[in-house]
Each structure stands twice: as C-alpha cells, then as structure tokens.
Image (tube, rainbow over all chains, first blue to last red; front, side):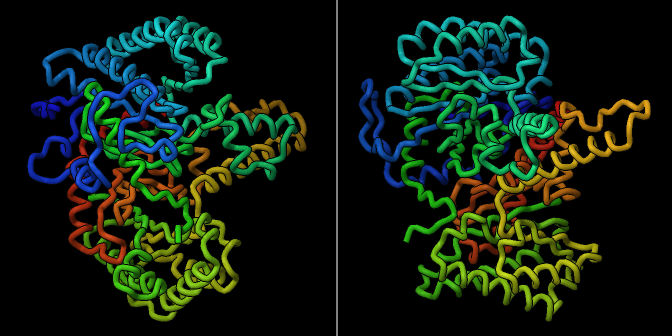
Length: 294
Length: 256
C-alpha cells in the first residue's frame, strides 16, 4: 500500500496535509496503534456474508461512523484537481458500504460534507453538490436490491433544491429496507445539531407542551437529527482518515463513548485492509463505559 | 503554546496492579502526578488546565472503590486548603465542574470552600470535573436556556403590551453562543489539546461540546507515569499541527 507524502504547498488548501502525516522521523499515532494491535489481521478478499478470519461477529461494532478526510490531498499528490479526489472518495465509500453490509454491520454514518466545508471554493462546492445528487440518484436501485436504508442528515436549507428532492425521494424509496442503515451527513455540524435540538425543545416549552424541568439527557437525545427513525444513533466506532486527530464537529453528543480510530491513510485509499485494521483494533479494546471489568 | 490543556487521567488502577500496590495508592500517585503537571504547565505558560477526575458513570463502580475515591478527594482537597504552597505558587483559581450535589456532603463542602478561597486568584485556572458528564452538562445547559427564554417571555407578557416586539421568547434565534453561556466552561477558552493517558482512544463523555476542534492525543503511559517529557512531547505535536488547526477553527467560526 503506497503512503502518499505530498510536497509542501505554500498555499495549503482547506483540509490540507497534516505535518504529522508527513514527518519521516517521529512516530505517528497510527503507526503506534498498528504496533499495539492485539494480533495481525489476515488480509484477503472477504466473501459475501463471511467474516474474515480474526473478526468475531459478536464483538463487531453495530454502528460505524467515518470522517472521509483526504480527498483533496490525494488528488493534489497526483497533480489533479480536487474533483478527481472526490470521485475516488466516492468509490471508497461504495466499497465501505459493501463491506459493512457483507460483514453484518448494522449502521454506517459517513461525514460527506461539514458545515465548515461551505467555505471551500464555490466551484468545488458546486461539484460536490452535483456529485452527491448523482450518487444518491444512481444508487437507489442498488440500495433497494441490497436492503440499504438511506437517510440524509444536515442543514438542508443550504442544499440545492434538486439535491434536497433527490435525497427525500431516495429516503422514501428505501424506507422499509433493513439490511444496513446508511446515513449521509451533508452540511452537518454536531454543534448545530445540538442547537437545533435545543430550539425544538425551547419551542415546546414555549407552547407549554413541556416544562424545562422535564428535559433530561434521553429527552434531549431524542431531538437530535441522528435519532429520527434510527435505533442506533450512537456509533460504536468512529474512523477518521488522513491523520487528523480531532472530531471536527462531527457527531459530538453521539460519540461520547465511541472508540476512535485514526489512520494516516487518505480516504480514497481506504479499503478492505484499512477497514479490517480498524475493526480488529475495535475488537481488542476494553470498553468499560466508566465501570471496571473486574 | 496551547492556552488550555485537558487531561483524562486514565490508568491509576492499572498502575497499582502492575506494581502490586493497593488501588488507593495508585490514585494517590496519580494525584502527585497531577500536581506536578500543574506546575510544569504553569511554568511553560499554559493558562488553563482541566482534568476529568470523576465521571458520573464511575458511580456504577464497586461501592468500596467509589468510597475510596471520595475519601481520597476529600483528603486531597483538604490538603490543598491547609497547605497552599502549590496553589500560591501558580496563583491558582480552582473550579469544580459537575453535579456537585451528587458528591458526599464532606467532599462537596470541601470543594465549595476551595472554590471560594481561590476565586480571586488570577493565575492558572485549574478546573476539576467531578462528578461530570458532557451529555449531562449539555442537557443542563439546554434546560437552563429554555428556562431563561420562558422567563423572558413571561416577563414580557406580565409587563403588558408596550409596543415593543415580543421576540424575547423566540426560539429560532437560539445560537451556539447562547448554549456556550450556560455550559460550566463559560468564559473559558476551548481546550487546545485533550490528552488521554494509557493509550485508550475515546472521549468517554468528556467536554464533547468544547473539544470539537481540539487536538486529541492518547499517549501510552499510564497517568501516574505522565511526566514532564510527555507533556513537552504533547505540546510539540500540537505545535506541529497548529497552523492547520487554527485554519479550521477560523473557518468554523465563519460558519457559525
């Protein structure tokens, strides 16, 4: 697997390279994590509905979230425009969806476009909006065949009307599917999700449907975008690619107890081997939720 | 230099086990490591330190361990009250963030006394989260904000129509900064770095709202082993990622 080390850009683009990913001497968290893995994970093609050796079905995460970072860097390393990277990123997502379904993961949430990404150059934003619309529209048949239920979360007020329509139609068409819940976060921000939930509750208080004293964690959690129509709003495992070590306003509330897995791999290169590594790492972790095991 | 570092002090019990000493002693050694880290941070110019001392989830642990921890906290808080060397050295203002009512009364009273006695200090700001959960902090902030809005609306209704538009009760203008105001961390900058020791890679319901752009680190040493050189290494890693972190923070602020 090739490790990309793009040359230093005097005018780094948004979401540009991280120094940690390119420094030759100092250990990165990803390489340390690989050394610490419980056992090496077997590589090899996964047959449909068969888990690779080494993965135990009972200790797989039920809900995986991915921050798909690194498309632009990947494209720049090849001397290509960002759109080339985003197309490659789309292929990586398709593969991740396929593998998730094959390995029995119940839910996958992908951070496709954050609220902060609106600051990107207009041409890139327009391309991405078009890409999302095209991908969603073209995938509906496949979703129906494979039993995938699609949901789109995020601030849809800024999305082009045609993308909003396409997303709603796809959600409606796949509503009864039950093999895999796929959530695409487009124009999403964890803080804004919390704010909209707060507004919604404040509105109910104003309408005297609720008293402030009645608000507790589970009532609040029910107002978050990720809770609507979902049995598994909280990811067990959150994967972030391209070496960035932060959550960047993704699922804030929902990732309170998520195991975090950071990898230097850029998103378009994220494939079966990387996914296996993340899942093996998850399996080897000791999830205590504040308690003790002994 | 980071202004604010947050620590999830994980590994006291494993440390005790590996050295065949009592659990309580592991926590005591952890406390010593904490005091040392405070001084190192202060000397390097870090102004805010926040630590995750006790999670609300930790109450589910074995009652004898919870009791040991509570007794240790009471002992250490009282030590700090009596012997103010460390506090005076860093001119420390101490906050306790969490649902203090859940603490046994002697611990709660000692904590409140320590907060009051350091309230006027202007040096290092040391915040201890106990017993704390970020989700309960957020839910609490939402409740407080809803109460505030309801009271504003009722106040306007009570004072009668006076020609001014009654938008104090409007909910659509509730913003990130409104919620910020009601968090325990109001007035404090967000952590630049979150360090969780002992190699675990999760936040465990710590400062979820405030750490969205923080640099997350999970060094292998157990908390009692965390020393000056680990701290320097943590800051160096942060500094290497700094230009990129700042760029993203600026972009995020524009979109809020």
